[in-house]
Picture 1 (cartoon, rainbow, N blue to C red):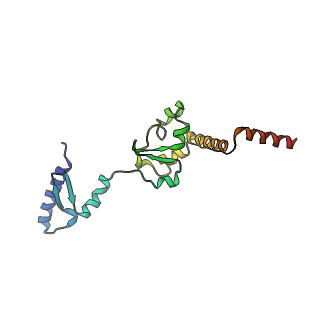
Picture 2: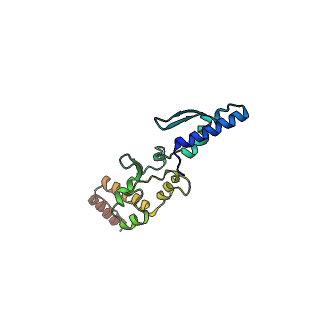
Picture 3: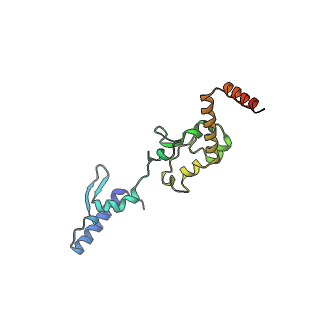
Length: 164
């Protein structure tokens, strides 16, 4: 039998009122304080809400993750997280896309409950071979921007001739 949230809380309120009549107590943690059917929402006492909140809790992206994982960015449009390095360097690597399902690259990461911990998705991605290659490619790109390739070749040549 399907139950709506409103019907669930109506039943909970009925049970609570029976229990409170039997015990002659008015415990705020067991009573429904207000039911607003027009807006389909239930306002419950703070104690009951804290008990139920874990079941009703939604996970969300935490911007603090970006402090530890400098490569992590949130895309408002796609409503998920991406690795800015892998997005740039691995977007055309079919082998990587197949292995990862494109998560962090072309598909947004949205499984926030699995984000942290030693087996968390953020930690696993950070130590993945594709991400490691992306980091190295970023370093090479940055070095090339600091010194043009012809300057690097000349310097390499000069250092080799000095050794001889």
